[in-house]
Length: 428
Image 1: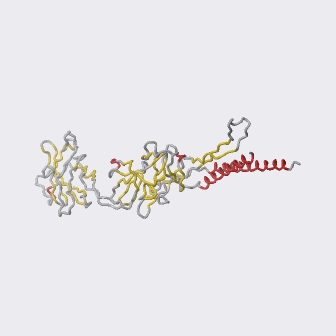
Image 2: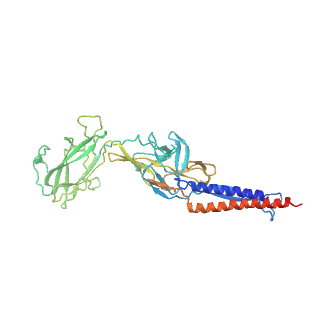
Image 3: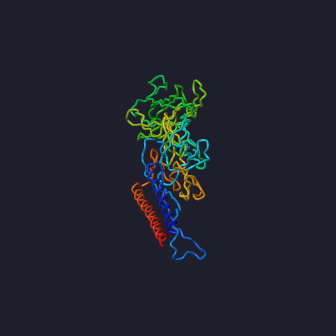
């Protein structure tokens, strides 16, 4: 009996040494989770049960349990590297075309393959939630996972429909009585221009001409004429110009909206591009001068915003802490192309160990629960960082000594039992 008990002890100690050695070997493996050997004692059972004086039959390995504790995050120079701060696993597919064959990992060493897909070192494709639109506000389809392909993304043009001006019109400028003619500078007080874009992303120059008409019906009044590429564009109402009226404090008084709030809005009629290119008409239905003033200072443009963009080329990608991956373009625009998918399990220690720092779902782990970073107890994403192994070398070296001593002690038990047997066999 002592032989078998000691032999089981040797096997247990050997298992402990192997597990500790594996932990030490992977101390620098990104996303690695240390393991520990868990043992239980063994007793021979009989019909009458185990006697109080039964010494036991040794030990056996009950489990080699991985410890899914958080590893330290280390920052890198690769913005495709990702680390999870908190609970969750990345979802990786066997390949960009075999997305139903999935594994799970804490290692975020991602890069682009030859087809522009985001993959890990094993060529497995990272899966992300599909965007519902072109903005984060449109949300993501958390039930639809897909690989992320970068090189097929282009910065689509965005036609302009909104221009916001904030100008100061010189209160000391002389009143102009002559009819407006953009070819005669004496018939307008000041002018300014903005670039607007059509549906092809082609640029056009919209020029606003301001004419001081003095006090009209008790209010300082300015006429505003609009031209695109030198062609006159009337207001949507059919009027040739708009009127800006100011109060005695120099602040804009009209136009106002239906609720009486000063919005300075002048919707323009659709402008058909000349010569025709096939692009849609330019419809500046949100042209506003809200916030404009009439002070005794020189004309100035204090604010100018417009929402159009030309076509652009991909210049890079960024990932925020909620896992939203943005494509950045040379035209200054950005677009969400996916949100990193995370999953968690009721019993992560029940996951199947697949190697390459990946795990697979099993009956013991339970079904995977997917979600977005930062929601439903999922951790946050740190872009440009990697999660280091959670192995503490100091404690592992101590474990190594303890396991070695256990092995030596069990070997000594066998030696002692052998000496006893030899003594018995030598009795005459």
